[in-house]
Image (cartoon, rainbow, N blue to C red; front, side):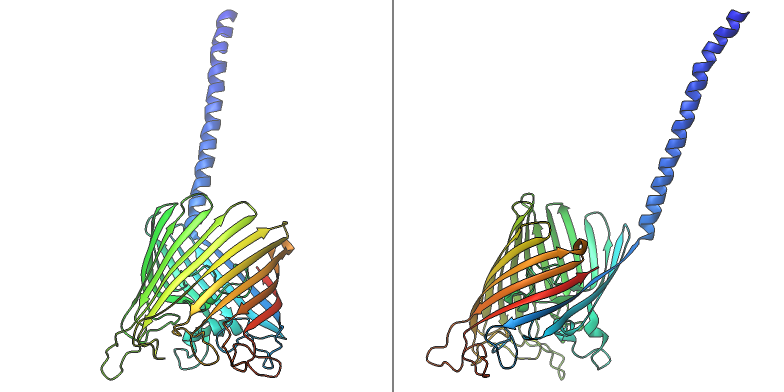
Length: 405
């Protein structure tokens, strides 16, 4: 009888063991399922994020212009326009809300550069300067699928290598290509990702750099993104629009066009060394936003080469060489006689990254050289200490102080 009892017990013990192990597996499966459900709920609820930055700068101009202006005869700088004084550049507050199917962005800016970057909204919708100047971006994106998305609202331009945000660019002062291209657009665009190495964006927008539109025509924008090899990105960008002011009496828009074809590419050659290139060709004919324009096609263009090297975890140095050609005079950069001109610019910038990346210090030296106007020393491009335009070149030395959060 004992033999039978022990035999039965020996059979039951393994079975009981298997049952307990099965219970454990079931418990673990339930825990995994709960964790997956929680993650899915969080993705549906979305994530709110608040970020921003503030930047200020000091620039010394070796020409010591009497007006303390870095602008020269016309449009030589985008934002760092004053010398010999501490200046606030831009204050940004950015709010984003993201879930698995969508994203909403409200990006507001304040300060002198906000006015300069939103010149198209100098008069707000209620007839006064105000919140229109504070809107840098305000848009939402909806993801129809993992490959197809749509964006509606006001968004930064896709054209160019540099952006308005000082912490993002390596150099503090901005290029002439940036200055003479669009800043932002208001409209609708869609992006389709063929793979992680290729995508296409197309859309329709109002006038360049404005919330509203001065005619019934809509501009067309596009961007082709390619990543031929690892760490090499290529963007081929385009905008074409009619910027002419509509005739209020007839409601018709004169024939005109504004076009920009832009190539932006960067290659991270090593972990510490990056090369970049921006090249653009633009053409215009007819009125441009009520300011008039050429009766025949006039073109402009340029190219900028970038090289950045990280020397330590804290310090990096980078150079930019740019040639910009506006000899046709169709853009705003002209000489002291109002004629079209060209410029060669070289910028050398250091980057100190402190406080775990929150504090950025950017010492910078920049040289801008324009063609001399022969035989007329008093009508060159830049101002001297006596207030006369006797200088064909300008060298500035400065420091940017940036905090991002």
